[in-house]
Length: 142
Image (cartoon, rainbow, N blue to C red; front, top):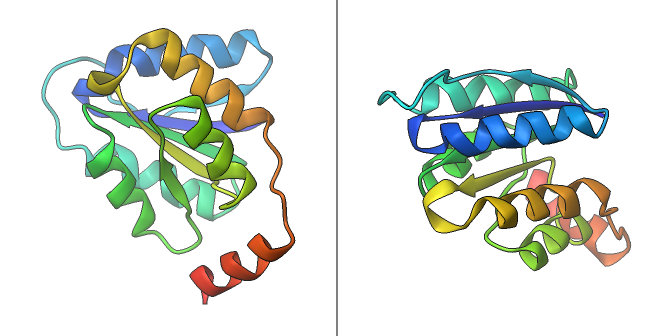
C-alpha cells in the first residue's frame, strides 16, 4: 500500500517509528516531514499529506502530533478526507469499518509507542463494512 505520513515536532518520534514499521511490512511510504523534534507549525506538514491522499496519489495517510487533534482538524479541511483521531485499537477498527477513514491522526503524548503501532496495524487491515455506513459516508461527503 502507498501511505503518506507527516507530523509536527511533538509527533516526530512516533512518525519515525511508524515509518520504519510500515516499510518493514512492505508498504511504500512518503514522509512529508517534519524532520526533527524542533518546534514547527503543524499545518505546513499535515495539509500536504491530506491533499495527496485526496488526490489519489496515496491510498492512505497517517498524521501525528502531541494530541493529534490539530492534525485531524487540518486534514479534515481537505475535501475527500475522512481523518479519524484514534486513541486505541477499537477506535481505529471502527474508523475503517464505519467511516471508511482514509487517514488517521495519532497523539504521541496520548499513548505509548506499542499502542500507536497496534492502531496503525489494525487500521490498515480493517475493511470498510459498507451497507448502511455507505449511505452515511455519502451524507458526509455531500
